[in-house]
Length: 287
Image 1 (cartoon, rainbow, N blue to C red):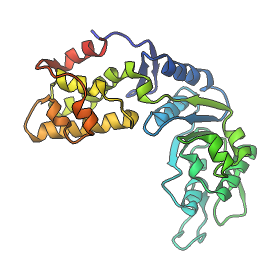
Image 2 (image 1 turned 180 degrees about the horizontal axis):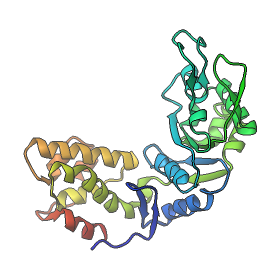
Image 3 (image 1 turned 60 degrees about the vertical axis):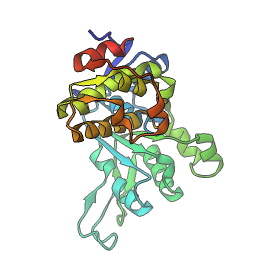
């Protein structure tokens, strides 16, 4: 039977944060501390470390009745990002054939999560500062101010002091968004949790494909790798390995299914002919 995690926080019906690592335990403690408070939250962590799940947890535990919406600030041009955030009026630009609500309108009474916030250009940062200070904004093409009560949760994966120093982030905006900071550790700093995450992704990705076991060599390699791409890389590795396993008609993940991944992973761990079934994985996690 799987040993209960040292730290646990239910996010929703599908997701829970579980950890045996004290640094990630502090993340869970800080989520609990800030969730119901009316303050903006800045989440700092490496790419793929789980910042979005932390943001979801902050909203889920907040008791807010409004929607949770998200946007990746690096994925859109400045004009499109402004339209996405604030909406636009008909005729604001060439393809604006109708009025459109923005995310701040959709998240009224809820939470807006802005990932890679430092990728936002200076002009848009000024407009965001107005939202933070006064709770109001203007749709593209409109001169009428609109109000929002959306809570702002932002995330960055770069050095904030460097971003401020080189003008990529306004200092006044930083201080208003960073009312409470949650630092998410990289997966290599929480090696105690790798086994649990292997189990989670095995059940989520592999078991539905009819894969019933993972051999010890494969499990050892997964646990031994240092995961520079963090949790997202582990998820991708498990997904690709499951595809490889199904392609060869197998029902057990083996080390050979990992051959499309970095050489460090292929060489990690010690070989063994034992198998680990779906139910037995829990025991391996706790070793």
